[in-house]
Image (cartoon, rainbow over all chains, first blue to last red; front, side, top):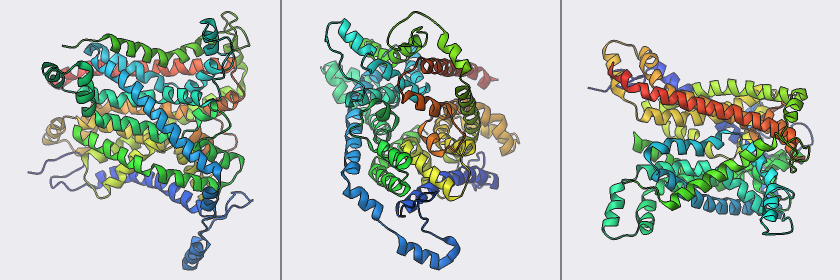
Length: 311
Length: 266
């Protein structure tokens, strides 16, 4: 006999009411997530105009087929050529990828240490420790980045502490450097890294570690040959959950970074808000999405496998 | 045998200190009497008093709260529906649907913001509170889906089957059995959506219109000009409100968890 469930009748067919369950969120995402992307794609192929809105619409649906023909004839790759030909954009992309790669590596190191320590803590204390790690994530991102300005500025607490300790006699410049950006990124994204890692470490079958110890494997070595390989899904999910958003990050480099080399999120922001060049901003966004497609696809794959493994 | 080693204790202590020190410093300095943010001038609540005079800031805070409540409610509804659809139903187009749920979680905010703005311009929608609500709902419903979905994944279906065998209609089964059981996840999803909306700067900056200033937009425009004691005070209030909400929610969840076995037996 077919198993009955909510929204399905005895034959397992989807009932009209259940169809609504799918349709409403589906249509919402089609309308407000997918359609906007297609519009970005379209505008990235338009030409800049001085009027409001600052682009010339290329597709005229009212004109029917002739409109479509005009649309195809009017497509212009000028904005992409602008991006490819200008060092500012190329450097922005490269800088973003570099910053994201380096900070993800640091996050992996810190995240593994912290998540492993939580997973090895007494069982009763674990929920509390997890909550302590997650709690800062609930307080505002903007506020947490801002808090670092207090610390890193020239007469801030970090320099005061260094001078007081006698480690230096001149206040060093922290704010508006790449170091500040890395500190801010690691600080902001640490919970994203710790949670998937903890979930993997916590599931780990401890008898495997005992077996390794019985066979004479030292604990540090067992960590590298047993624990880490078994937690690869958590490592992958955590790394991508940090890497992808960091590539497009705006708040951290804008508030803590210097003005010399902007990351791509800042370049897009400037292009849009300061230069009011919507088509070029759209082209920047399209190239960014193309760059991130592979990591996002891998992340989705890991996420789907993780949830299906639990079902 | 579980033993907490010395290195693990050090890792925990350093990690938690790193996470909490900046917030603690911010809170302490919000009570600093001195206008110079780096010089300690004794305890004072003068910056909190100054906040009450700042009409623009209060308006922005109220606007943010309104947007967060409405968009979190919408996102909770849509996200729970999506989670049920994904875990319970086999339908055509399930994969692209799942892809659209997971993509916004990692999509850089500048892209989400820009694309939504261009949509609103294309369909000639006046920008303001309404458009920010749509934008936040779209982003946060995906987080709600993930949370509710993981709750549904380890859910005892036999309770639903029993109700249906006893003659409950599918709709009634949902409201009498399913919804109460997934409620903690739904509440957690609502709170997450609420706090994400309250916090968002980038997407709101793109989708806002004239006259609609949210708290993060206001704070950001102030912060760009440097650290100010008033901003420390606003942030402290924000942190206290959010932290107590989260702690309360987790306590509620805990007490519910304790009740569940009893519920299952009766």
